[in-house]
Image: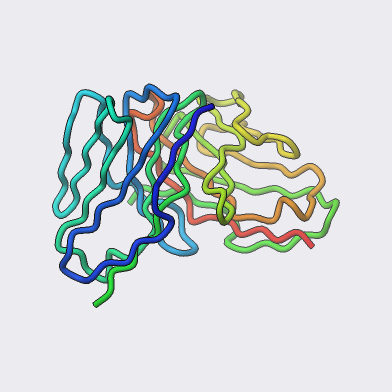
Length: 110
Length: 115
């Protein structure tokens, strides 16, 4: 069956360090993979989209990689700040529109 | 500023009631979606629509129906609310295009409690 897994339910890191979040998938052949941020009690907000033929994408302190051989995407936040604390969701196209992972709750400790 | 607006942030309904959750977007998007989000289960797709009058079942459509009479409005209907439908409901929209190719814009969510 098709699966999207975000390996860590929660991740705590020190301010200034790089946070790395993982998204693995099985039985999909997605053309695109997206990352969203969700704050408590709010809807997800789009961050980045990466295509299957792109190895890496950057936006300010954010970097996403996409390895279709490993079936994995890595999401990095460099120089992390307490304001980056949130839940981060990966999403990709499956048999139905945008299927989401369960998310990783990131806490950046000052 | 682009917007997806859900009619209520919080809603409390009784078991057996018919419940309407309204969603309006002002971006002229063709695609609209309803998800529910539960702790430990993540976001799950209930129904979606790629055009006016069109609807498709998602992963968990049982107990729900939808209506899309106008492009900007997508309503989720709980025919007879039950306690296991207590959840956060999220509406989203995206421009027409291959699914996954365009970002989705989400509303602020409706936290529904069925008692």
